[in-house]
Amino acid sequence: MEEVLKVIKERRSIRKYKDKDVAKNKIQKVLEGANWAPSNGNSQPWDFIVAKGEYVDKVCNVFYEWAKSYIPNAPYIPEEKKPLMLEYAKNFGGAPVHITVTYRSSGDEIKDEEALMAASAAIQNLTLVATEEDLGTVWIAGHVAHAEKTKEILGLDDNQKIAGIIPIGYPDINPPAPAREDPDLNKKVTWLGF
Image (cartoon, rainbow, N blue to C red; front, top):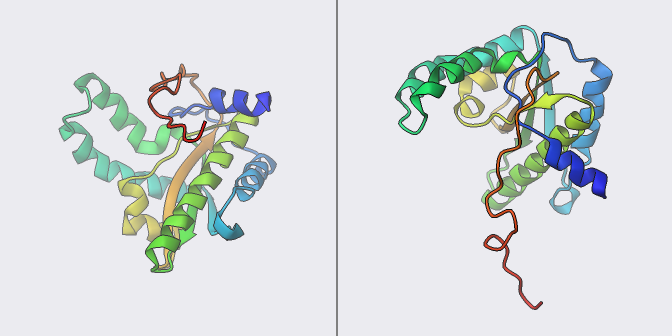
């Protein structure tokens, strides 16, 4: 069990990648881990779209077109970080592959929430197996994951929603671990009946 916790603590959000292709067998191993995620009623509501080349470029362009006007005007982003964020927005740090994790929307609010939760668990597994394979990832959501243009590029139908776009590749940076809020879990945990 200590090994699992070690990988969890070593995983980082990578925003700069080496110009190096990722072997298909490594991607398949990462997808295998994602596919073993827990889900309510063993529904396994996720699907994976693995993209490279022009598909990656097109999705990045959707994000960059939005970011060009958003980032410079975002009051919560420190001015000194804005140029780096805009540079990253051009191509998600140069990741050669994107794995988009989708889930089916049924129109039932509870089932859709459960599907999103399960797809999110699949993303967690994906990022952890990637770390174990010496690959870097970052979880992208927000505007680009909701944009109709992104869904069109990836060939999604109206009932498919994106839980996350996961750029994946060999890290070109090794960022330090961000501090945990309440690391001793004195505020975030409520014990009942202990």
